[in-house]
Length: 148
Image (cartoon, rainbow, N blue to C red; front, top):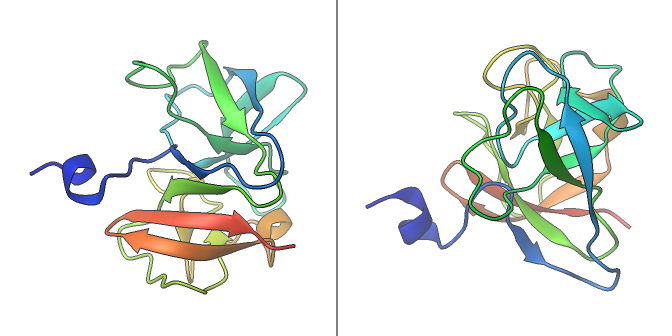
């Protein structure tokens, strides 16, 4: 059985809208690689790319919209800056170690885990420290919410 059918969730899915409106903005993927759904991304103005260092800023989480299979380099992707009260499903690293109530840390190293969440990442994204917490876990998927 595939992960979606088992969990009824997928990476980049908005789980709850909350008190503020959900607005996903469009950005161009300026990374040299595809950006997966449900990972934190960085960038400037209308450009988005994978997080690669602890000092990167957060644009938001890459969303899964429509029938798109991936966010290819040079194409437009949807990014959600997580609003008040909203929850979103994101990708955890292979051994993320997160449970409901834990603070979320974002992996800030190049490679397959860039922008994914974990309890103890190899290198933590400074701008995400203390800003998000876990509200649900389904295997490699982690549902998170912004701290208020």
